[in-house]
Amino acid sequence: MNEYGFNTGLLHGTNEKYPQGATQVPIYQSSAFRHDSAEDLEKIFDNKKMGFSYTRINNPTVESFEKRVTMLEDGIGSVACASGMAALTNAFLNILQAGDEIVAACGLYGGTVELFDDLKPFGIFVKYVKENKPEAFEAEITEKTRLVFAETIGNPKLDVTDIQAVAEVAHKHDVPLIVDNTVATPYLIQPLKLGADIVVHSSSKYINGSSDAISGILVCGKGLKWDPDRYPGLAPYRKFGPFAYIAKLRNGLFRNTGACLAPQNAFLNNLGLETLGLRMQRQCDNALELARFLQSLGGDIKVNYPGLEESPYHEIAKKQFRNGYGAIVTVRTGSKEKAFSIINSLKIPLIISNIGDTKTLVIHPESTIAAHISDEEKQQSGVFEDLIRISVGIEDIEDLKKDFKEAIENNR
Image 1 (spheres, helix red, strand yellow):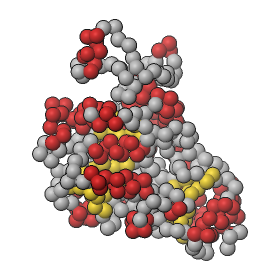
Image 2 (image 1 turned 30 degrees about the vertical axis):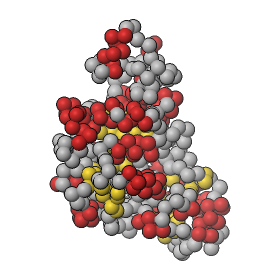
Image 3 (image 1 turned 90 degrees about the horizontal axis):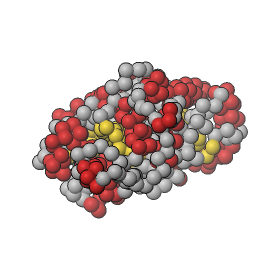
Image 4 (image 1 turned 180 degrees about the horizontal axis):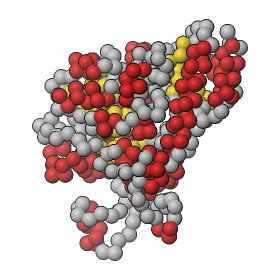
């Protein structure tokens, strides 16, 4: 448990000591690790002794990153993966089998929707709620439901999930709630404290902060008492108590599919983590001011941001989040052609299919990150052909306002 405030905890919360007095964990750029005896390595493989054997399974640099994120999310353990999509895949398939169903929020990132489509040939199906409300989740749960999934802030729909209420619905039916906290980060909200069971991040985004490393991570909370009839794969791991989920994952799917995080990327994530609080506060402040400014321009520009009182999710966002409302703003422009023209007219933002960078990024979701999902799925995800997604950075806000004003007014 972290005894410090957020930013102090980022720097000192895990109390790790590094070799030779180093201030950062070294990059253990080694695929395997030697041992003094065959007996030692046998004990490690038999889970009777702590240690490192092979980087596909674990690595000291990666473990340091996992410990830090575990602390930030107030979890009991983490597994870092090669990407956010790898983390989601591991989080789901660790407990699912053919015949199971997922009940999912309707405003999800396009890549997650595509992953759900990929699960269909394996006999795993997804039911999307009609709207992001607790009662809508409950209406879709059946005897086949094995997990509920939502994002804290939908990307790019920007709907906000009532984590505590949805967790209560899931637990009423003895199924876990898995939450993607990528867009909000633990700086704004810690879903495990509100009842979620697993938290997932695409740590390529805000956790990393500089677009220099692809990675993902899942964090396990104290967890449910897993019913072995519903989750037979977890039955052999009941002896691990709240660590059953992590124990099964590390001893099976994660190890065997090989989507491990590279030590170099873990090192870059550790560097980025140290400024997460500072960056997120600046980005959230900038996003709110930019959203209000864009709204003031009037015309056919329609602004969506949870921090605006007009947002249907403002009240739940205000209740749940601390320090801000996230750093993504979307605008509808009237047409795809106008959206493209505005994007191409901007001087400061970079046209990049990422979020969470220190720099402001813009993208046209309908033709990029949502290009391969159906029209119905686009509607559910809040993707329209005239939509621009803005991932707000840490630039001087007056420069951003001037740039967006010129781009919009020159295209009227």
